[in-house]
Image (cartoon, rainbow, N blue to C red):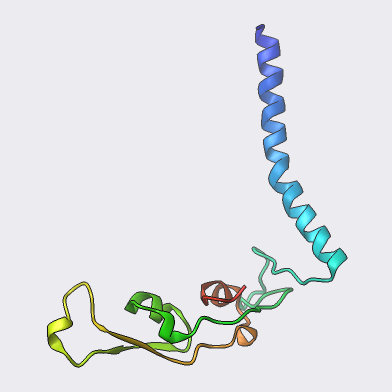
Amino acid sequence: MKRGQLFLISLSLILILSIVPVSAGWFSNFWNKITGQAAIVEDANNADGTMQEGTCSGTPTACKEFATQNSCNTQLGCAWNVADNNETMTASVIAGTCLGIPTACTALEIQSSCNTQSGCV
């Protein structure tokens, strides 16, 4: 294969791969406009961090469903209740249960909060 042909093939491949993500995002936005569904803009937030368009929706996962302290603490409205039995506590695992009422998805106005709330989109 000649050097010129290899260059053209490489350039064509780079061009095709650079267009794929753009066209996927464009198609998604186009489809949402046709169907009337709101889409959250990934990288275009207002200065205060609130979403420019779209809403947070879904049903948040119940607090009692979280089995570890770390996962419980990431769900807004949930808190880890430490067990009374000191024998079950170690440096890496603290026995307990996840309690509380998770924050409703529709109440979240900041995209990062929506994305970290399990069950919300």
